[in-house]
Length: 175
Image 1: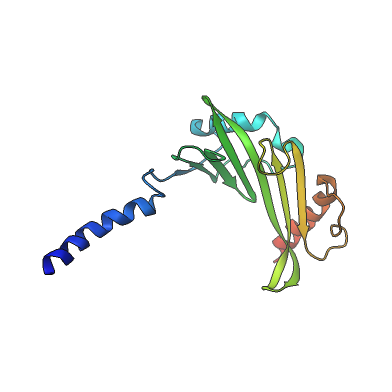
Image 2: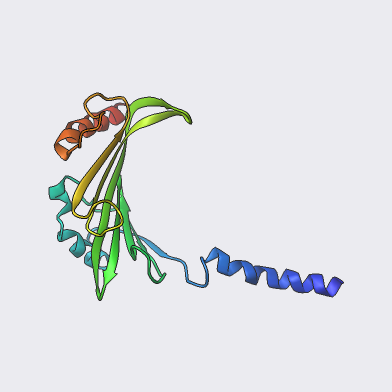
């Protein structure tokens, strides 16, 4: 009996490792880079195909860019970049990256009451080039909150939300 328990104790960690790794695949690689880092060049090249800044997304900072490269096969994306309020996913096609989706998420100073308790008002912005996220090549902006300028069933544009985002940024600075 003692021998069989010892065998289980030795084998148990080996049984858990594949679960921790998401199967038998190695974990993702995560690095913090600057915009000048050569490793980020293929990602920045893929971004230039849609010119996110011209769509109104926040600019890429010089530092503090987190690059996550997936070592898994398949999936909707193979690499992600995030900084500030932004998350961007890329799909590897042949030997190049292609931007799949870019999203921004902003919390405002206003508080709304929800069944889960007080929650900050929120803007979510998404632009996808690949199907399966939001409609391809369409900007989608969603708002949750009480601001009458943004509430309702109408379609929001970057022109609608830019002044609000500036207000939120100023309010956050004053805190």
